[in-house]
Amino acid sequence: MRADIADVRLADQVFAPHYAAPMPLVLTAAAALVERPSADAEMLAQLAAGDVFEALDFAGGHAWGIAPGKGLVGYLPLSALGRGAA
Image (cartoon, rainbow, N blue to C red; front, side, top):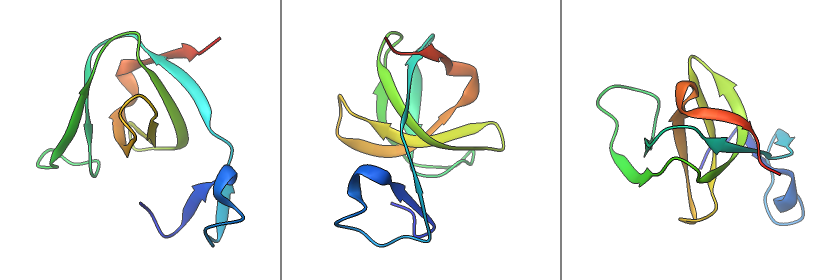
């Protein structure tokens, strides 16, 4: 969870200064979903190649968003993300 941005689908439930529409992307490689974009961040889940990730923000080589298959929010390296989901 971040205080500065929220999924636009939650606009009627959560106040945030900014809202973003999720961008569904497919992982091209397995990657760890982490709580923050740093080397010592706690791993929340391991996502597999082919999983969908709904990106809400991009910065510093990472995407922040939702792993809908796991019901978790966190960061993934941009290198693990491919094109949009169909």
